Image (cartoon, rainbow, N blue to C red; front, side):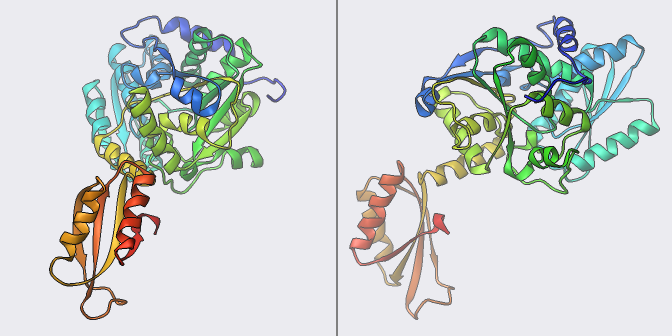
Length: 412
């Protein structure tokens, strides 16, 4: 970690926030579970911090309550925030618990499940723009023109201190951690956690992880100033802020040891792996920490490592998208294009070959309007469910052995 200097958030602020969050009906202490499966995969001891089991399904309530409770004591009665989903729920719950009103501006693309949940916690939702930056601009403008206090998702010392209470918990859960892995969107979460660990266990390595399509920290550190993306592209909507702040950049620079990036494919694999092996449903932003642990960029062999599962608010439509992506990558969903002489019985013959190899045909279609086809030829495009890559390859070989030309459309 870099040399210590005067920063806006100190461990004492986090400790006071920890004492303030003493009502387990607002913020509860979330469990830690050892994952033997992940441990075997990476050659270390892996403990999952399961913050996705928080009341709102994410860590965001910690920072929101720390800020809003103090502001209400000072006489503030109304709050406004911008969020893609998780911060929205945290602000709505915190404001309601403190007897205040809240308006949450969310992009029109926000998952419906998160919109409904925010309303369920007492927040008034306004849908504005296509992404987080659009929602943020509108909310800040409304705060400047009205009486509501703006609650930033990460650019606020009270928010960072509240998120940092997770660092205290993680240390108390396992005091001999070698590495902690934390997803980064705007940087408030990792800033708080890293600040806590720098005080409690300075030898613990703090690793931040970003999605490739929303990565800003590397460039921000190189330039010494926050870099903001014009647009983001990732399935991990919870960390798709497209930028960090001066506050979080300073804290990351001071307390975080390493930054890695992961692809959407790696994130999708991690979502599926956690579902299969840990029996936990998490959103892409939460799975990013596990994706990083499994990534060749990060070596945790022989270490005790704790990835943070920060949120579990996974929209069912997104879950379907993620699972299809991950299963396709594993070749458990296989699309084959087979060139045939378009004569009666060919579909039945090919279907029989596939069935004889124990695979299920999900759907099949003819494709005749293709330039490279000769008159009388056609393509049959099969979508097949398999048990994995070896099974898929055996089906392809069986079809080819009957004289057909086969293309694995997944590879295109």
